[in-house]
Image 1 (cartoon, protein in one colour):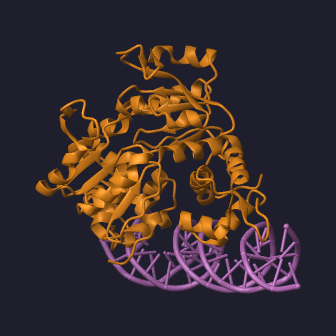
Image 2 (cartoon, helix red, strand yellow):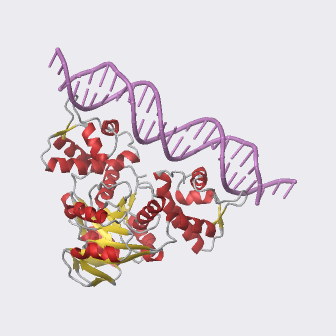
Image 3 (spheres, helix red, strand yellow):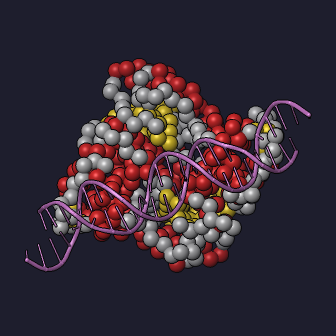
Length: 207
Length: 207
DNA sequence: TAGATTGTTAATCGATTAACAATC
DNA sequence: TAGATTGTTAATCGATTAACAATC
């Protein structure tokens, strides 16, 4: 498949969200123009974006909402089941374990790991000591590892994740992670997001 | 001040993070070349970015780390105190209330609000019924409101935040928020981040 | 058929990169 | 002084926007 730019990739989940909303409210078709309004981009951009994947519309008609939802689900890999383990059972780890939205799209949290096990389960997810991490991963199918530790532990945890063979890391620790080429990292850095807000508050940059 | 592009703004917190790390480890000066390596960008870009704010370096020498940290702290608005209130005392709201990292940079969570008050405080932060929101905001200084509710409540909460006069919203609900020009919104959408990871896993796009 | 709207090609815009004179 | 490295100007690259033939 032709390489798709980062900018386009970041828009895909937003298309998906808006289209699911339209689908839920019974809308059957949508033009690039209308979809663009929801997305706050241009109609050209919508058509360019979809043409990266072959183009799903029909001249004179627009796009079939349900078809587009299905295509995006496929493109985003939401049609498959993904098993997730979370390392770090602090506030963030627990919040993620309890987040019900993931399961709807095929993401299942199958275990939490921590250096200090206080509960045997959290929101129905079993909690294990970090010492059991490798054994668990080797016996269960694990697709994604979430780093929900403090910065201090994050690098060591990353090394263990890579060593045990997990290829996808969802990182919540405020650190940069160097990984081999075949490993994918996606980070959420809450401090950085807050600082961006702080900057914009100050500068009056409201866009 | 000249308008700074979104791309540059997003890099500022990362510069800040790397520079603080250098400062902490006793490094006194750094060249654009070395800083660029940490940031995974080019030295040119580093110099271009800083020149947006006037340029803080010295030919033949590079940048004074402590000076740069101070400049960035100022630019990002981290030198001032910011009071934050969180609406929604679910998993995410509680995680944010308990996150110690914010306070170090001047962000203080002064209250949590929820429709269903189970505790009088969480991690030292008082919890109030959402009915008390407007009264609280009118009597205390509040700079930032965090939307940590489910999608359903988010739009109504947004309206109340705007109506009571708070100009900065940090949004964790997976919805798009339309706001007046003088209000700043910064969103963290965890589902979208997870979907991007899912896409990249599938496509082998590891960058 | 006439109107609407796509997918794609070309034009524009903005961000990144390269080059280099200035100077510490 | 010679070497290092900045800030800035110019060149390049890539993403967004505009235009339009194709066609439902």
